[in-house]
Each structure stands twice: as C-alpha cells, then as structure tokens.
Length: 200
Image: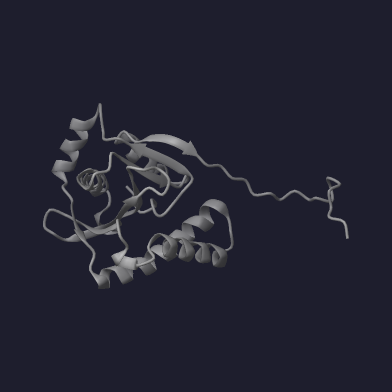
C-alpha cells in the first residue's frame, strides 16, 4: 500500500466526518497494527521538508505535465505559503508516525483547511517503503483522525492524485467520500489549423 502520494494537494478531494458503518472493522485492523504520533524534531523537519518539496514537485509534474523546473518552483512556493514559520507555524501539526515499538516509520502533516472552518486537512502522509503493506497506512490515518478530533476539528479532509489508485482505495475503505474531482487536459491543438492564429 503506497500512502506517500497524499502530499500537499491533488485533484481528488475526499472528506470524512469519522467512520460510520465500517468503524468497528477499521478500528480492529488499526488495533492489530497500531501507530502513534509524536512531534518532529528540528533536524527531522529539515530532512522532511527537502524531501517533501522534491516529491511533491514530481507528483505535480506527473499529474499535470509542467516542466520539472516549474513544478519544483510551484512546490517550494506552496510549502512556504503553508508553513511560513517552518516547524513553528501555528496550528499545524508536523508529526512522526511510530510503530508499536516506538520506531519512526513515516510522517504526517495536519493543519486547518484553508477554506472550510472546523475542518482539518491532511497535507501529507507518508509511510516508509520498508513498512508498507503491513497496515501502517490505515493505522496512521486512524491516529490522524484521533489527533484531529482531540484538537477540536469535526471533519478530516485530504486530496489524493487521481493516478494513485491504491491510496484512493484505502481512503474509500475508511469511509472517506469524494466531494470534488478536478480534471485537466493538455492543449496541443495547432491554432493555425483552426484559423485562430495570433495576428502579427
């Protein structure tokens, strides 16, 4: 299960106001593979920030097709806007995901939704490659829901790139529902062939 492709943004928006019909089943799965959270250290933040900017730029380029340089610039700009004070940015929780032994196996970034009052937003979640496929992604999302609830949020929202089918299936299985789908198309038509060439 790849859970590293939910990063700062993406074209499919999903939201949850806590699991409903399958809550007991999901809780049982998470209990078998529990995850806890702790704040990142300053050193961990610096490494995470560099990696996230690079990985998110690759996702932007993959999903929408801009040149790598433009995607990297967009990634850096969005990161600076969201975390102007880095690790000390108010109302943002930059966490390490821990397994049952306390070993760090991933990262989680939660903050307020920029447009929906009372809604928390998962800006990024990542499970290390060595720990994937063992239920830690689901357990980390369960821990994220508990954290958001304890902070006082009533809903948890996230975006996932359309090409990440595996992550989408995870969120859907946890009762996240799609609330918006953003679609894009590269325009490669020849304007001359359609008689709309720019005049000199």
